[in-house]
Image (cartoon, rainbow, N blue to C red):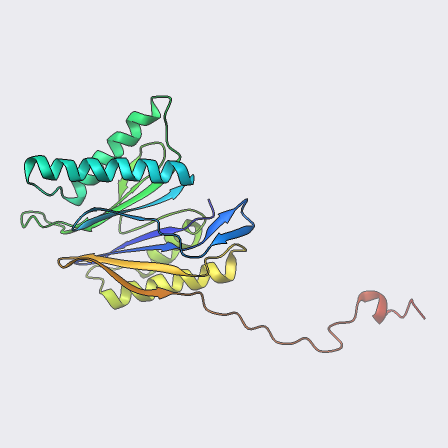
Amino acid sequence: MVESVIGIRGKDFVLLAQDANTTKYGILNMKFDTNRLFKLSEHCAMLAAGEPGDVVQFAEYVGKNIQLYKMINGIELSPYACANFTRHEMATSLRSRNSFLANLIVGGYSTNERDQNRAQLYSIDYLGAMVSANVVAHGFCQFFALGIGDRLWKEDLTVNEALFMLQTIVNELGKRMAAYPHCVFVRIIDAQGIRVLDNMYPEKIHVAKPSEGELQTSADMMDIHS
């Protein structure tokens, strides 16, 4: 998938990032302001990438059911509970005729003081497999994001260090991918809830102008045209 969604877990926060491009056939950019984030609760959100229809239908179904649970029971589900519910619904749909082609990242901050890890991050694929990790990604960006995250992530990661890691990933995407994201939306989830941070953009690549000699072909250098 050309779409890129990335999650980074810090000491007491989760950083969620997504490219804003909507691409058709892998070569045409249709939009530059696509929102792939779906709010599940006041302290939990989900990033989704995949077939546009499946993404919207599944994400809205999960989000509305989590809100319904809160209305009936008066309890806000933790990110761990939201991720497990989402994984269960994905696995159930996989065994029916209405499966969804969507890869998901669920992240948030647990308001339960008994949780050892308040910042929680989970990756769920379209086959219903779920894993908790410090850095997760879906789409072509994962070929670079997971390697960079493995090198730069550390315990007690601060917000500035996480943003530096994310900018490094975005710069690498701009250099290495043909269909790179022109703009990346960034959100942070912590004890204060879900907040929007400044957009990120790939670093511009500057290439030196070639000299006249470098522009010559092999045939020119051998003077076979004379």
